[in-house]
Image 1 (cartoon, one colour):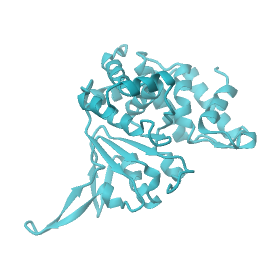
Image 2 (cartoon, rainbow, N blue to C red):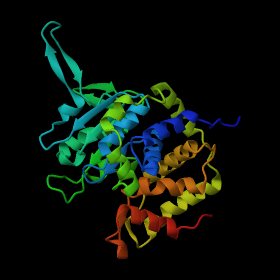
Image 3 (cartoon, one colour):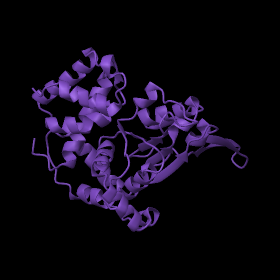
Image 4 (cartoon, one colour):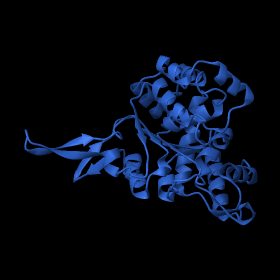
Length: 311
């Protein structure tokens, strides 16, 4: 088999254009793009006003993808997301009217403000890339990418996402407040909404699908799999964790590491690729135990990395 060509200047152009609007968050932008390259879905948890929604718009615009936004509220119904069948008198039959889920990038804004019933409406779409209603199956577009934002659970009017829903997200990120220099650039610069309108795509959907196929061809050596399995095993048996990483989490970690390697122009996965993506992939899947009960997702992931040596 010939050597995989991993030189993709379009990816670097996309990152550069995104960084002109989302200032000072290069690592978060890389992780978000990695998540999409790995065919995953992204959960962004943070306080309001730090750029969660802006990141979603910028990602879709830079990659030339159709974009749809759903504002989750306590009275939102599953049909408001998936669509509904309406009787057409002219044809004397029901016709399906697709909901906003039928877009290449779907922003589920403040997803934890909706009831669990409405949250669960996303499950099949995220896992199977299809919607089943009234005995009919409707395929979703390709690529298909859900970005969900959620506010911290201590805020009024939020519902905790069930573990089954959390597990559908390949990555969970937190943007955090900008640095002083980045915030000054925001204050002195052009309004973000205007910059998004001027943003030119660096990719198109067909090129993105090609890159997603390239991710699957990134080589993974046996020692690297040993390292990955050691991380999974330690998460399941260490007293620091009440619940470890599942096989699905291991597959997600491998996909993300492959995508991170491609983003850095390498045709093979290195240990640092796993280390770079593990906090985003594993943080929301780990449960703290022992003396780590007060640890957050990022700290739990760092504990796991610190305790498992590279073979």
